[in-house]
Length: 563
Image 1: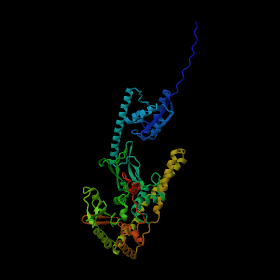
Image 2: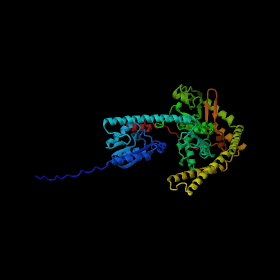
Image 3: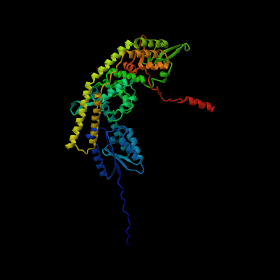
Image 4: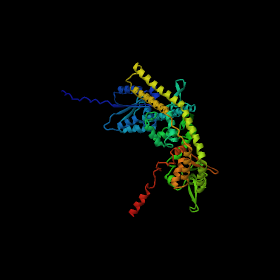
């Protein structure tokens, strides 16, 4: 009996698994030393080759923390993992901590991948899918999270101590400064802030524009400063155009007055920290403290929520100018005896009660009379105006003689920038550096930009100084007579505009009234040959109405029409 051969089909070979590599380092220092991207890639590719897997994609995350998912390459990886048909079967990393240092986020994203049929593999922590392996992975993730938080705590403690000793912690210095080596401690280089001679001139110019204007008018607003700087070709330290936020940050940065604050906000949430956690350190002074304080007062006064349309168009002469000397809040209108009496009253006390401010009230006609009589008899007289303007002219003349050191500093900065450019050209010609290096062009462009900015500011410093106007006795007498007449008679709105042209604020205290103004405003009004009004149209913007209809009039019309 013979048997027939049985036909058998050979087994079909299974295609190799497709792997996506995820490589990450937290800092540049880590990238250069203990766990670099090339080292992770080499180990991951060797692991895949040993398993017979095919590497189809690589996602590289340089300088990103794994405590959250705000990582560009990680987001690209998760988007690719959700595509159909599936682009890869496994995600391979050096360890689970490369993927996440938060145990909840790690488990959440492992399950997201699992729903797409994709496994997360650690080449240094090989685990399976049974319950004991899952528990082990979760325990490892808890230890990674604990270690990450401990490292962050110790790093912040070291940075706080570094700031207490007056050293810079390594972020980009504020506009107007640069960092220089202060000392060496082993391999560590300690740096401190130093005034950048080019950028600091722009900072001073910004403060000067806000306080005094460009010589053609009074102090400029933030938007006007942005337009002027961009039109004249000024640029930030990154070569970008100026913005309103940038200018506001410059005007409010206390570093320029000599005090820099470190550890102010929480890095992840942006939450402001308690005052006892903030570290203050000394910084080179660019703007004198008195000038910085004056700018802060004006910023607060000029805020849109402070100066409403009723301040300009309302029936009260001193609204917007009169403030409570205790809290700085505006003095608002209050009436008594069914409108028979009218008072200026502290608005803070009215809104929040006497626990916020003890407040004070003064009859409106009395305060108006006191202020106008004082201006007429003590300020707007020929002799008093002559003394004030003489002192201001002397101040202008002194400023013209004070800028020699600044000019020399700018000349040195211009020469230094030109020498750096020439040294780089020489290095290229001599073959010291590779002319095809892609970073070389960026460095050369940056040096050229620094050189051009230094040259431009140097040329501006060398330009003829502002001509100090010639003021005669006849001009002072005519100005005094005209302005007193305008303030004494006419519509309230018109009188308010003339008053705001020369007065900044009026502090009302229990026993005295203090009037503040700026001499340069008097100068601008005087040289215009006649008192002039502010040509700007007053505008005001409140917050959007969160609950009620934002257009009550239209709502009433709709109700009437529907009824």
